[in-house]
Length: 336
Image (cartoon, rainbow, N blue to C red):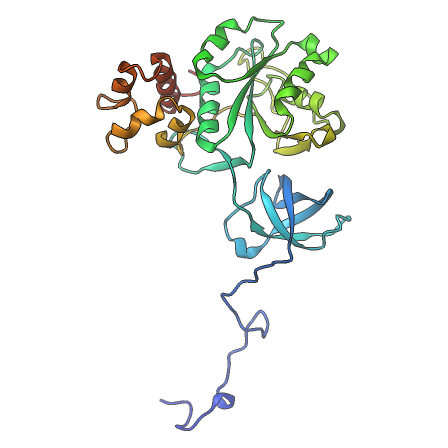
């Protein structure tokens, strides 16, 4: 049954009102060319602190971004009230492209990928030489995540007054990873901070480590004006510390010489998301040898072309061993 006659025009047609207002819906989103650019400093329950021209601004994610979330280190476009005054709220309308991404999963069989930090230049893996005992498999996993995400790794070994670093460092000699060894006394007199600072100047550095290794204590010493809670108690039975950092936070080094991103202490570092073809990029002496590898080669199977590449003298066998040891961490638990 026709509701209208044969000769109707647009004025005759009844329009159903929009329940949320009379403005017609549109799939065309504004481009926000006039949006201000800033860096995400921290994220707390849907509210983000963004640094815009030296002013911290509280913002929330715009609905048009959908499920895409901004993380610490992201460069974002922001509109709205940018004054940074109390009880004001701006809106993040765009997340710019990322130069690097530090990601992890809860476990190796967890398909849900969590982005921890974006746009960091390097990853400082902090581990204690004793109290708690070092966990090489956890270090391996952090290194794989760094190589996979495009970050340069840095080893920071703490509490050398309790145990020597030689045995642990020998595991990573063939990877040519820079390192800094610190002691409690050196942290107190500032010499350790100066050595670590040399590795950080001009870079954005994410710090990661399991609880109790002294990560937050070191960050507090590097950025004394933005002190976080000190290191938690180390359980004498489990050898694990209590989490003292609950959210990632970007902190500026003095003199505008770089950024430190303190991340929550982790007890696991899943690598479900890691693709072996990306990790190989961190081994430029081995990468050309993969040209003859079978499709989707894991680089640790009988048909892998890297064995012939090394046998021909193109690379040190120790480097291939190190690569395969790192890739094998995806099959082993962190506590092994």
